[in-house]
Amino acid sequence: RGKALVAISLPLAMLMFSLVLIYIAERQTAQAEEDVRRVLLVQGDIQTLHTQIAEGAASVRGYLLTHQEDFLPGYINAQPLIDAALVR
Image (tube, rainbow, N blue to C red; front, side, top):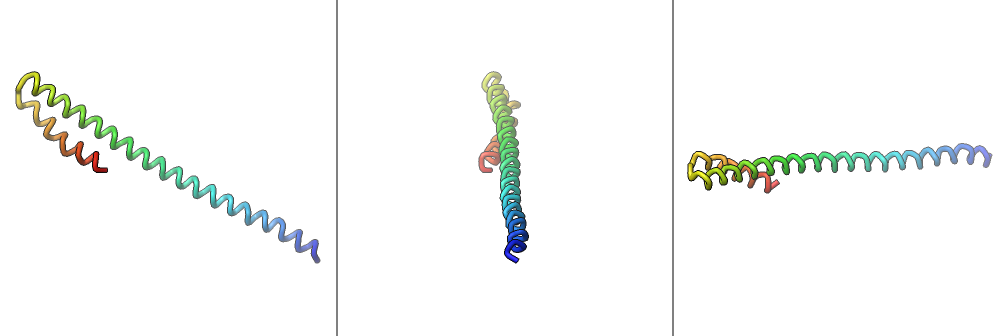
């Protein structure tokens, strides 16, 4: 009777241990995927911020070189977008 109990309990214990390891691996995979999503969002925000800063800088440069106010809307439009990107 003892051998039968060992023959049944040992594979069952190994199965339970395997299930715990699979659960841990799945949790780590889910966390890694969430980290990747967050990094991609941050990269998008950085790209947007870079674009808006470049647009604002080009507008200011154009205005300073020519003193034409036609260049200022690019700077004025970029300001709130830059502020919004920095808040996130």
